[in-house]
Length: 259
Image (cartoon, rainbow, N blue to C red):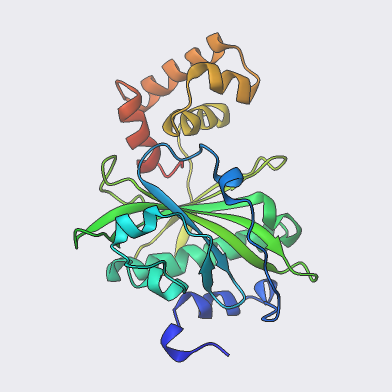
């Protein structure tokens, strides 16, 4: 039974959907976190932790969480993370989680391990102020009934890139899935709507990889394109977004809710 002092608002959201019912007796093993995270997050200071959705406990922390938020020891429960979120952003976070769950159910729960949600919110830092963080959740484990019971959450400080929250929820597919769903959410209510940008799907993929720090050569290998084609996509992206360089492209990617 969960202790009352460890209650957090996301529990009510998760429990309202049968697709995420949990088995509290499940014993979880620590996943290969370093292998999963890899070199994906070179855009700012980041940390990760393993979230057990059965009881909201945390394990497998990256040590940066101590420096970024001033913890004396690793947080043991998700409520300690929720308490860092700016009070004005809590309603958006709850809405974002509802959107993610509804979209996963719509696509099919059998694909939930291949769907990565992300969105932004402000968190209190060691300095005592609130800065913008980018949240990503990699779903890593199901129980024997196919219910999601574990994820790796990654938080990246993007205050140096942008201070404006786009209030966009992004659900992207992990290979072999190719989903790319953008949802614009009202930060003060439960309303939301799908959104589009002027970039093509391939340009959006290229922009996302540029924002994550990959070189043109690396992008060409990852997307199986020639380096010339990647340069052409980059040139078109710069023109469409009215950006002058990669630094402005990274900010634009967050502003558009593309990563």
